[in-house]
Length: 179
Length: 179
Image (cartoon, rainbow over all chains, first blue to last red; front, side, top):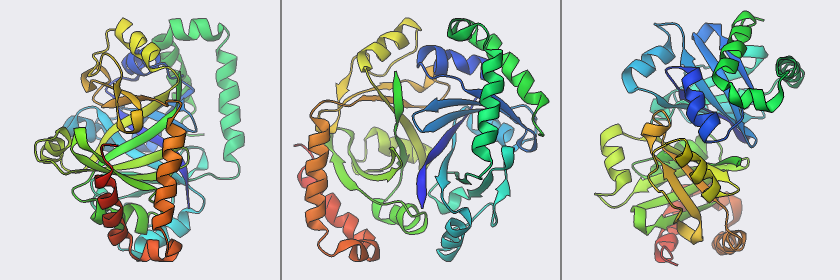
């Protein structure tokens, strides 16, 4: 069963510059920044209701996201759905002959179970599936607490210096990328 | 303030065929189909948590969505955010010099207030804003009731004959497109 849209991923050339639209003009908040080593990207998370906008900046030249940016330019990259049972969902997709990038769940940051469906099976959309693991809410809350400790100046400093703030967060994120 | 992701719009060549992935394989439900006269599209709504996947089929050859499909092929088209005050959001975007397709809110189906932000101001993403109007929940509930009356055979018939079902819904939708 599909529970919700987990996130919409958007490829950007530069996270700090992207804050100008998504945070300063549109008014979303930035919750945190992560470095995802095996995809060669830095990711900024901007909650919107129960979902996130995930901004992806490729930081490794030959990564999939870097190639995507080179070929298509910046813009929407994939939709991720949270499902209650990723194995069951993959089994149903296989039974309908939908081509999968990951036949079995793989593991994202923080031990998330994820799998990608190939765009040729969805009508041109890269779709990610994601199952929340039992220890993830705790990990998330730890990350949020670490971010709060950084936010000594509160919301005013946060919005005034958002680009510098993202730089700080991503440096912190890069240090913790392989935890 | 951004309340949530209202919907993610995906352009498809053919609504009935798209049900094969989104409903039959992925497992989303189809809530309703609407004909949007002024955009030249039929739209199928598939709820996912508090948001919808909106499948758009262009049915007028020279519409914006038809041109998009011809140029880019099928895939993600835009993100729509529900905001609490669309005028205030547009004013903030203007103050930050973000280029807008609609400087003032325009009206979508069912009297919705909507406005589009130009992709050149967002980093390549077509972004729609949407403010719920007071009479919209009632209009939605009427539409849902009309659909329920059509669903005489219940869920089993609905999933077994999903493509025929969509054909029926869109014929009904087309008849009511300008209400």
